[in-house]
Length: 148
Image (tube, rainbow, N blue to C red):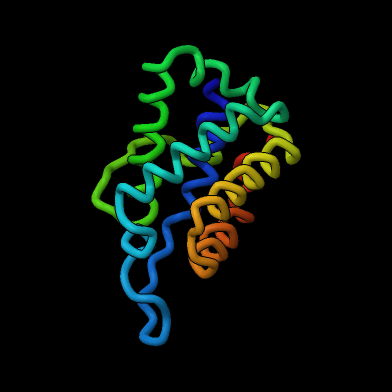
């Protein structure tokens, strides 16, 4: 469970970009997404989706072990996303390289989780610019997350 929990956090760490350019979007990504209600909606659908995904769900067995555990996992992940997107929440965790060292995450698992996130963003009608911003930032995390 720990290896994929951290992988999801790693993927969502890519949400750190905020827009400050005069001709670009205004406000933090967190604000443009719609604040905590939108973050919770994304996390809820995303976690539900990865738990149903046979390509990766075996790594999430602990998160699905009880309704209480699943709720706690979603809350922690929402706090992570909130902070990463420039919101007021605080997430404390390891850096991605340290968190994934020796966990043998495969490129296919990483790509499957990214695909699940993409499907969630599309389902929830996250604006295209914000989707692109989130997804464009995921690529560099792959080297930290995927096992060597």
